[in-house]
Amino acid sequence: MNTKQDIVIIGGGVIGVCAAYEMTKRGAQVTLIEQGEVASGSSYGNGGLIVPSHSVPLAAPGVPLQGLKWMLNPESPFYIKPHFDLGFIEWMIRFAFASRHGPMMRSIPILRDLLLASRVLFDHLASEVGFEFGYEQKGTLMVYLTPRALEGGVEEAHLVGRFGIETKILNSAELHKLEPALLPEVIGGIQYLQDAHLDPARFVTGLAEKAQELGVRIQTKTEVLGFETSNFRITRIHTTRGDFPAEQVILAAGSWSPAVMRDLKIKLPVQAAKGYSITLERPQVSPRIPLMFGEARVVVTPLGDRLRLAGTLELAGMDLSINQRRVAAIQENSAKYLPGLERAKVLEIWRGLRPCTPDGLPVIGRVKAFDNLIIATGHAMLGISLGPITGELVSQVAMGEKPEIELSPLKLERF
Ligand SMILES: Cc1cc2nc3c(=O)[nH]c(=O)nc-3n(C[C@H](O)[C@H](O)[C@H](O)COP(=O)(O)OP(=O)(O)OC[C@H]3O[C@@H](n4cnc5c(N)ncnc54)[C@H](O)[C@@H]3O)c2cc1C
Image (cartoon, rainbow, N blue to C red; front, side, top):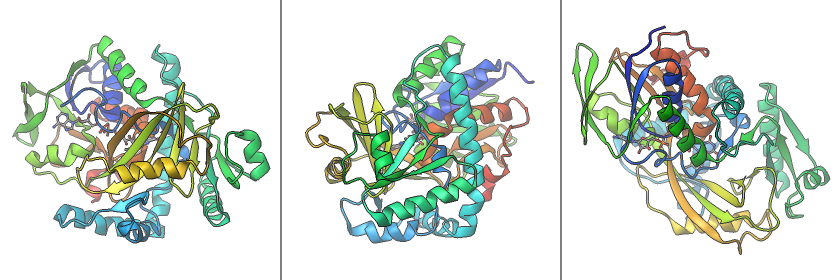
């Protein structure tokens, strides 16, 4: 094993921090560069769900059409903003192709393997790191108001069930017994037993502190501006706070990754998909188990004395503005499933940009163009779930070990 290398990680979200922690444990000298603070990108206020249940990629039959249908609805949970940027148009074409039945079926076992491996690593981390991050293994419940949507949900449960994901279909009585907080209008649902949840901000900032204790140098408020290269290697990284030499560079800049790569002339098909969360003071009647609302496409995560609603997927470029109508729609639509949400005190409204590839699989591994560059991005709606396994795979690649999961389906050159 190759130890004591100077490794520079760009990006202090869940992916960069998990990679830093794993690599420092393996004896590498790691510097993590972050333009803001740790977890100031999309890893802060997200749903915090760890979801092997989501082994079906975003690119699936019917999804592009649904996005187009909802384009004119200002309150829809999935929105594609038409804009004439060449990268976006190329991405949409690839997305449409990847959404066919065949490619989706090929992607399911790849995502499943990553998600299940990561779930196991969370169990280890919870006992290893020595700080509490709200990790609970209670599964999740996907619940429905209408028979038609429930039917669709059951179909998807059977599909992932065929790939080994543990599901339990619940009728109304069984569901309400398991989660009495739900309103009587909820007619049934699916229990996903391998899912779990955590407080994402606590996990990422806590792990960053732990990594720092182990020797990782964390350089915040430092923006990467460009690179110096020679003989197919990156030799220096230019930042707003001086230059950093590097033996190896890990790119984990989430939705900003394509912009960071531009200086290296590497095209990375990643589009930002904005989502919102509303963190509420926990109402008196409140769920014990994290919920996913089938029709509203909102997830609900109990976080101690808070309750978080998260939802919406807006393909609108790097736009961080807050659309209040969509935020209000998340709360209003959720009130159809749970009591008291309209009146609950709002503690925080947040938005984040999910880094999405057109085929719904992340990009993890070395790239052909530079010998010492590793990319780890494109985790879309699964970045928290996939953080630990991505950290592990990236460290294995960086340290010259054989990755425990075959990385060829995740390489950048597939595009
Ligand atoms: C509403 C919502 C709900 C979600 N719910 C879940 C969920 O329940 N479960 C789940 O698994 N996932 C969920 N996700 C997805 C998850 O949040 C993301 O996949 C994950 O946070 C991506 O992590 P990342 O480290 O790749 O990117 P980020 O967390 O965005 O980190 C990238 C970092 O790079 C930094 N950076 C960018 N450019 C530069 C530069 N030039 N120089 C230095 N630093 C730079 C940024 O400041 C940022 O901190 C959700 C996302 C949203 C928006």
